[in-house]
Amino acid sequence: MRDARPLSPFPLGLLAGFVLVGLLAVPFLVLALSSSPDEFLAGIGSPVFAPALALSLSTTVVSVIVIVIAGTPIAWWLAVSQARIATTVGVLVQLPIVMPPAVVGVALLETFGRRGVFGPALDAIGVTVPFTSAAVVIAQVVVAAPFFIQAAANAFREVDPEALRVARTLGAKPRTAWLRVALPMALPGLVVGASLAWARALGEFGATLLFAGNLTGRTQTLPLAILSALEADVDLAVVLSLVLVALGGLLLGALHAAPRLLGPTREVRR
Image 1 (cartoon, one colour):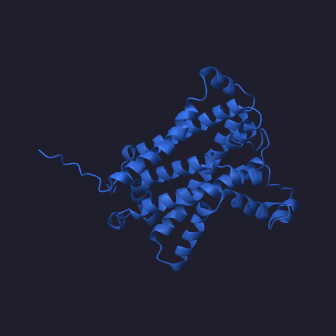
Image 2 (cartoon, helix red, strand yellow):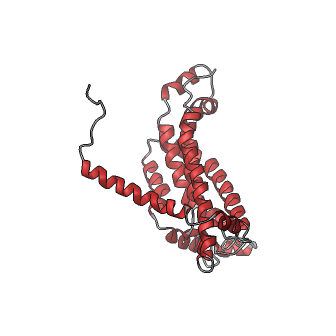
């Protein structure tokens, strides 16, 4: 009996693909083998580790909450709107994805810095944004929000309009129909988008460095702590990198598990 599995029409291309996979995976394997258990424990015990980890986790949690709350309505609007302006808004939302983080950092400084557009007004009321933890959150939101909005909009596009119409005919108000029909159906996609946004915020470096600085205990996230550690203690930089890889792996696990654990709800509830 013949093997039913299709053969690759591009065997040499497939070989090149496996070489690419190796290029992607081997450096992380080498990184994992670059630190002994004793060195890993010593790195975790470093006075730099705990503040950087705490700041990364706290700011990314705040950033993701802001992104989900503010991004879900705009994602729904982008998914269902037929207006021409929706295309323009969609392009603007995706712009930070293709911009270098350094450009985002400079743009934020020109917007919220003391000499920026809103700088004098903020200074007049005693508010300073750059080089604060608030600047860390703003930088993370700007670079990570497009990932959630894009994933959420795609998820909302998969919602069956007929299910919403049925809910309305059963007496549900528009908001109720959206909350009880559209939102559950799109929930796996929203979780995937939130995980992507969290991962992007967790790894944010360039915009944060330029807009928030690299101040230990105030604005130094894990990626920035790695930069500082490379100048004095490479072993510590390796440990910090391993922690970021582990956190990224957990988020990737959530990405793959979300569609299975949160299967789309097709039932219309009265």
